[in-house]
Length: 534
Image (cartoon, rainbow, N blue to C red; front, top):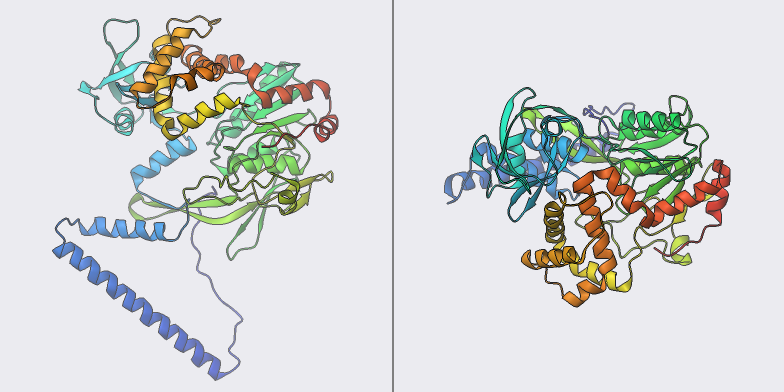
């Protein structure tokens, strides 16, 4: 998403009609357009008047204009365009971009019994007040929250920094409700939840979003790992949906030298604008691997495309989402804002990463541009700085293709059964893990009774799964349970360490980095890596 832009008056200069006849034609065309606009305006006024005065269920004049403006935005066919009220805009910046807000610093999860805490942000009022993942919120300021939506409960918890709020929790293993007074503060969701040394002197950094602090958090993580003696890096962009493009440009600069192009912006009626690294790279020569998947999108793809085009990182994983368009925010009157697609991003080699998408904005999975040699040849091909072939028109293609999770046929069958009711499945898994989190130690193993509890929760949530199908996918079920329990009991970093041995893209990256001391050696290994179909 680009920064805020202001509309300019376009002036046409140096155009002189060669004949009076041309002026007449232009005048007639303008007059005809004016008459069409006047008829359309009268039509709208007539419809508005009848709705306001005759419709059984009407609305205020102001509301009608707002809805008409929203209808205009919806009618242009831009899947990313939105008209935000002031409240909706605040939610977008908080939830989608991950910028700072006034509140307590905890994420919520809706479940059949009510609202539970899914996670607690480090050093937030919630963390300092002893809130634990899995705690159930039963009242805010003495008012029961039973029956309220997750969004409504979130609104009750948000507020001006320095203001107070009383919350009542239920906690597994504690017989009486926990009543706590909190003072709201400025909460800054983290872009980098943790960083660690893993494998043979390799630094691992998960970058989850491009919010207003992504660049500084990445830089801090890099410096910390360098001081701990790492000699290579794995940057994990899997699941990163993007965010603030200015932060993506700054993160790219951590790995690219001053003057190297990061991306080019092309917008309607304007000259292309090139964005380049402004400072020396923080990671100058250490080998780098970027992990991507189908959910790596937008600003994340700008980073991946820039580092791939300049041969600065080997891309490992699955083809990314393919969102290479620019959303600009325009401030309007009365606190409203319009998010509109205004241009396209291009990587340094000149390729567009925009991919065909379905009507709901999801990738069109019927189009797999890497399915075979013929399909690959139809994609526009470009060259990296080192002369390698890279492809445009369909997301970022990995240099080493590794599926995120290679499921057996039985596990794939169960995954298909879960898919139509993914939300209910997630809730059932969360509820089981919430009950178990206080009973486990760091070396826990998944027990048969946990699977039984998960199966019963699925059935209660309306996920109609055959027990034989469920049992046949036992290894995958165990991994799901292990990850959710570890996350709630011990946090993200501990859950990651438990999952790392079965993380195929990560293990491929670590194997390659263990054999390469330079980026050129890493490229040589990538060139000879097997390429399983995606």
